[in-house]
Length: 267
Image (tube, rainbow, N blue to C red):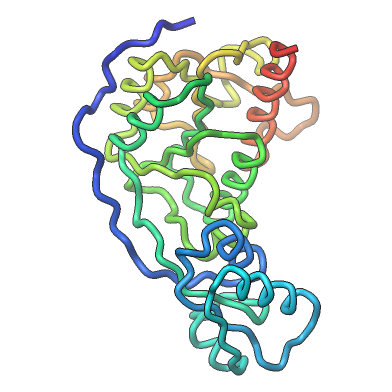
């Protein structure tokens, strides 16, 4: 077990979060915002021609939360959504542009349990990113770390695929991923990368302590500098002829192995 250092890697004030307005679409994303963060919802629009049980439930929740709801026609929703699939509901919300490295380090300094982080090294497909966020939230990940450059933004597609998880799990953008990994090491977090040519089978490794799981980009995998800053490289044993898994599927396999080990060690 690595001992925790008192060096946070990038000390200083927390970066200010840039508040932005964003349109979110669909029942999962809009419903999650209304239920979990109604103060961020500026306006909710629903298709005036749609009055099924899902719309009734959502508008009732919005009314209870004090969210202003407006009925409008489908063409207006199509225009506001910018071509995104909206299912007859969309909302304008206030969202944070991003949280930065110092905010991440300060969050970790305040943690009272062994943190579990997911680091995505330039995952560029928004569907993969959304699926990773959904899996991470389900596995109890404390934070997701993304590089500012070369990664898909948390946009409407990501939110839809994440089914509300994008609004519940903290996401941090870092300027230099290799430097961030070194800082996490200094804080006592063990860094495990994933690659098909890894040094050890996933199920031979131990994840009971503070852990960061690092997943590579589609096709390219982990970048060289990212790999060099990992303490160990895990491979998922494959029984068939397929050599590797989609990044979101592999993320699920690894994260829930961490969950399994932690649950076993807690008994």
